[in-house]
Amino acid sequence: MASIFSKIIAGEIPCYKIAEDENFLAFLDINPVAKGHTLVVPKKEVDYIFDMEDQLLSEMMVFAKRVGLAIQKVIPCNRIGISVIGLEVPHAHIHLMPINNLHDMSFEKSRLDFSPDQYHDIAAEISGQFK
Ligand code: 5GP
Image (spheres, rainbow, N blue to C red):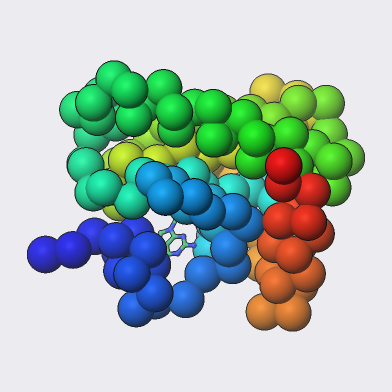
């Protein structure tokens, strides 16, 4: 069965899209730990990130860098934290989170909630900075 992220990639489930190329898609996490929390996923469905082919994995990190720099232009923060968990969705993905301190990286924090309009505006602003 296709993963939820494959359904998003196929356009069967909506997302707040940040950026896309032939191999990757970046979109806002629907249960964000921080404003601008973004997921970068390969279009080719692979569960475990370390099962990805080396070339594609390298390219995903470079794509994530471009997305992270765009987030940083929109959301005031010290850094963009990068993490890989993968315990919930069996489709490789990188979390990009604006952070100011170690606690901001915690997935145990209560998640934020935004209105559809707010998610839309955040995604549009970040997308506008993607180069
Ligand atoms: P992980 O697999 O890395 O533990 O967590 C998966 C992440 O994907 C979570 O932060 C969760 O909020 C996010 N997520 C799960 N389902 C969806 C979805 O349908 N759409 C979006 N945009 N994010 C999702």
